[in-house]
Length: 207
Image (cartoon, rainbow, N blue to C red; front, side):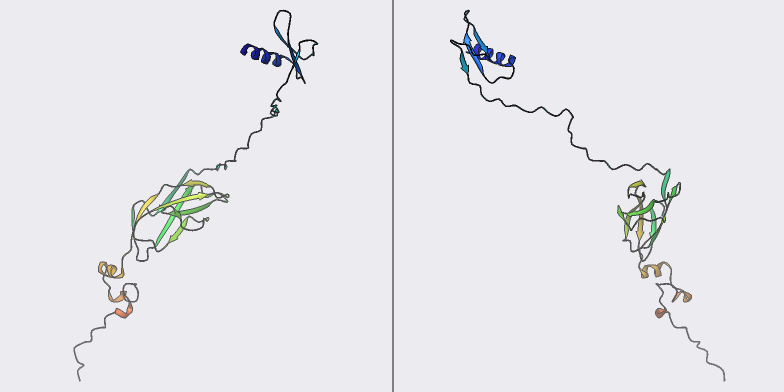
């Protein structure tokens, strides 16, 4: 039986696409398959409908790859923070700090500086390399500056640079530097209302 099925498969494969197949036993006792009807003992074989899959198109259909954002072509030779210096200690009652950056070559047209404090932008990027900060909390912080191009891509960025903010109270500042008579009304820690009264002379005028 298995040999019969194998022979049937090979014969069908060798035949062109047909509407009908016949089989019979020849004079030598061999089973023959043909697409031509034969009078006598030829039997018609009922073929199951085949599953024809259309061939794939000749051109390869591939999903388009997502476009990667282009990288900036221009690079600066140097970008660094000038002020404050690394590990600088800043003493400010209001937590104020002026930060200055520089680059080599100078800022290219359309590029902008942006300052980062503890990894977060301190404001909008702009052409000025000088940044004024205020109300910085006590403790250690990190500064970094970056240059953005016209499309907002980072062209250059410095490493994080630490500094230490010490916010002295007015009382601490008075202890460090006591108020002199001329300081009252001039220094925040020496308000005019706390200026001591002038000592009156104890010598009575002579009559």
